[in-house]
Structures are given as C-alpha cells and as structure tokens.
Image 1 (cartoon, rainbow, N blue to C red):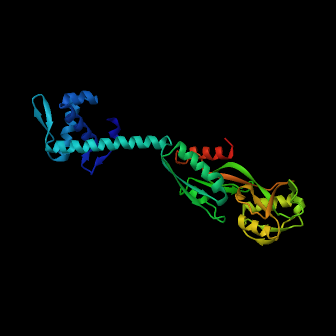
Image 2: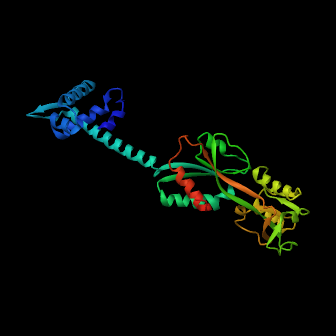
Image 3: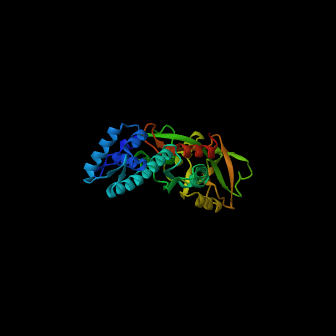
Length: 311
C-alpha cells in the first residue's frame, strides 16, 4: 500500500490511495479487518473512506450487520482500483527490469566497416543475454561524426575512429581496438612475394586513396611521414572495395584497414605493413559517467569488448 503514496489525485478528484483503501475494505468486508491488513487504525480507514465519498459525491459503502458492503458506486470504484493496482504492479516490475538492464532501447551509431566485424556479433551476444533489449542501429556516413548525437542524448553509443590526443567534450571514449592498415598490391607487384613490407618500400609507389579526410586518412599520412615520405595519390576512391579494383587494374597500391578487407578482389594480394604500421583506433563513445543512460548500455559495451577480445 505504501507504493500508492507516490501517486497524485486522479482527474483532480479521486485519490488513488483512498481507492486502494476502499478496495481493501470491500475485499475484507469490514473496516476493522481492512485496518488490520493495512496497518492502520479503524478510525483512519473510516476517515479515508469518508473523504473518498466526499470526492466521489456519493455513498460508497453501506453497513450490513457488523460489516460493510459496496454500493453500486463503491463496486464501480473498486473495479477501477483493481485495474489501477495491477497497472501499478506492472509498472513497478517494468521499472525493476529497466533498472537492472533486462529491458530498454539502445540507439547505436556505427560506420560501415565496423558493422559486420563489431556491431553485428555484439548485437547477437546482447540478444542472447538480454532478449528484451531493443537495439536501434543506424549507419553513419564516413564524413559524419555521430558524437553530437551521443552528447545530445539522441544516441546512446557511437563507434568512431579517434585521432591521437583528440579530446571529446562531455563524452567518454572507450577504446575497443587498434585496426592496422595492410598493404594492398597488384598480384604481379615486385613486393607481392613478401610476407610483409616495410612502409618505406612504398615511398615511390603511386597510391590509390581509400579514405575520406579525417582521422583514418591521418593515420596513413602520419605513418608515412614517420617512414620519411608523403604518399602520391593518383586516384581517390574513398571506398575499400573500389580501391581494390583500382589496385588490381595496376593504377597503384593502397593501404586498407583490416576491418575494411572483408571481401578481397582476386587481382590483389594483401601484406602486413611494418616500420611503422599505420593504425586507426576505434572507440565506442558514450556520455560521461553521472549522466543518465540506458542501464543496458553497460551490457552492450561488454559485448563489444568481448567481440574484440578486450574484456
């Protein structure tokens, strides 16, 4: 009964708490019995019923011997009180599930190459463990930064590539993995027989661009600068599959992140890069601790960490 104390008057007229007192009186059949069940005094129960009758503008109980029985109006309100009691119990159970992370709705933003390798298996794990949590997925364009959606509360989590030292105001980046770039070479290339290539060995090559300007391209350019050169781009594809096609046609070589090589063109070979290896760092971005968030968010982060092996 104490839980009903959180409710205000229904329709500015009927007090839900008093309706529950009425329901108990009708169920027990006496004011004294209802008082014992509720932990009130009989006088307090009688006062609650009297106020409710004043609010309703009609008698709700009539005496029968030592007990009471509901009038037509009392029976009507008791039926509604039963329905309200069930709904409140359902609401409390639903809130308990939400607080525990067993239910909820997560809005997740991700970029294309993170979809199959990270997001899909993480969502599968979440559905296996928390089947009542709904996940709304939206693919963001390479030129978009979905961090603003997270900051403004329109999304719960976004997968992004962050440059070294980049600050994210109001957000907490959770590092998931380093995704190394691999060298994509034509099958007849002079280095195709190697197991790996040194980045500096590509200094004189024509390059096929595979990235939009941003942290992914910066990762390539920074590594090439360490190796002592700036790549000479002869064609810009900004798409990993198309870049492989240009490489297979002999237009140049390309650097493509491991996650971007889900399908490989038959006319290319892929080799590890070293000294140095260009790497892009993938983060899950969430709002800072202390900001209200979906309780199931932690479970989804755990699933992402499990997928990349960083538990």
